[in-house]
Length: 213
Image (cartoon, rainbow, N blue to C red; front, side, top):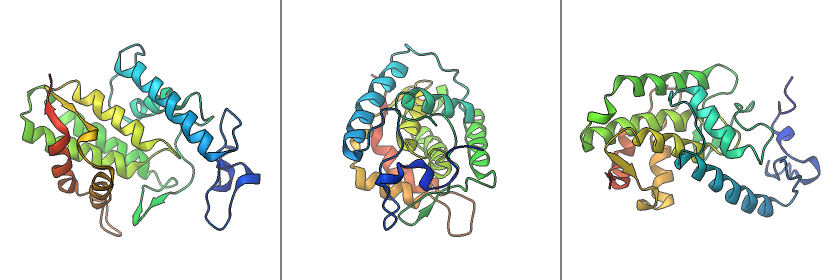
């Protein structure tokens, strides 16, 4: 059995606040201060992401579940024991309930990602079609949300590696975070439904996608 099999088990018990369900995640630094952990995590993960971007680390470009796990494992290997492993608990953000951890939904979503990537001739897409295809991939990745922490950063690296196979690049800073978060939320499926709504992401991807310099 995984040592991380309940919501509370991801946290240091002495810092857990049952009223909010939030606290300091267990980490390899043994850091109890959540703000200090956040700063250390940000710095270390940014360094690891730069290693991937520079090609210093070779991760097989399979664009499937194992690819995403490998990205997360590399990014967070210095911070969390469970780096590269699926979460064992369900998570929500605002009105969005992400894929269930217990019914195979995460793997189904990531299988959809693999299929979407395989079906497109990415190196030949013109910009509008790239925006549409990238939005579809991102919507599935976002709804999968397979890790307890670090989904956004892992997804961005995944998308950047995908963009590297095309004539385009991604500038995430081109869209304010609140607008990005809203579009991501709207791209999720309707209550009780499965289908995502990638068209809700077309506008933000239209802003961040540019021809590669």
